[in-house]
Length: 409
Image (cartoon, rainbow, N blue to C red; front, top):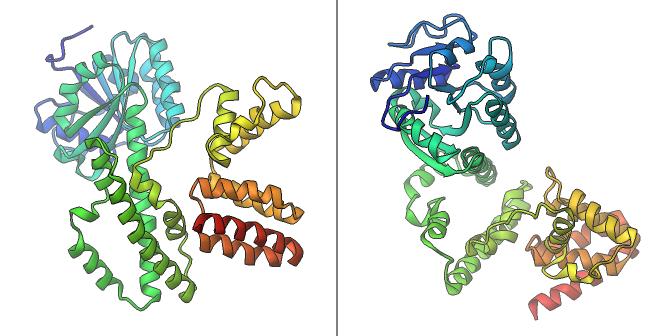
């Protein structure tokens, strides 16, 4: 069933919603009308120009196709389409290419890929964006998977997409989509925070929108720093120093305005502490897979580079093993709470103990990771006085002022 990349593959589309239906229409416009389509909804293809009548099952689509474009909503739906009753993988599917266009986790990509491989098929993960333009060849498709399968699928992908980007091995297409979504949702959150701040200060939102739209230029392009990294950055130190100085001044003023108006601005708070790292283009590296090494690396992230050297090499004491291999490798490294979240919680518990040495360890780690600014450190002291007691708050204050003096010295 192997075919050269230039040979048009018979294409099937499963899921005829906004994306899948649009893909099918774009294929038809390009002269590669899908050989087969399927959707669980009756009449899903009625308003799709040039699209054949849906078949009775995903398996029937697979029988009539060399490449199946899977455009369902979730991993559960994708799994059901593949191995449920009448699923694509009901029979052996040697050489069949399945293009997963649903946004799912990488764990789900690996699971679905294994199911496909067990039946002789190959899965390409293909994160897509521009769903509203799917019917007009407007999708950007980010693909992960083997070179050979990608080469075979490319003519089909290009027939309905504006841009096709092969991101690399399996999972990279979905990772690119998730990263892109993080930018999108992060922007929405930042805009909402900015709008709240401006509105509280009496700025009409239509005027704010006008200022944003008319004020965009290359210097404020949200992808500017990524472009620098791609071009082979990093930025010169003097440029980082200048940009960081301006950002600190501007974000300090934004924090003061938020405090004056009683508006929460958590993204401004976090950004100010991290902005120099952003300008340097320092990217977060994945943790090692080996548990002990992961724990040692997480210790350095928590308390500063080289902290793990305090652990005697080859130490086998149960308390040390539990600290490195469980507390840091498993707990501090977990998702859902940021390192800063975990540190602030731990700092609060530690402050209740009145242990200046433990407080200092946490705060040195916070400064090394650029998680807190000097005003934020002093705000912690005030808050701590009320919740940890005046005596413990004084201990916290002594540690903070010691570290501030070091920073400013």
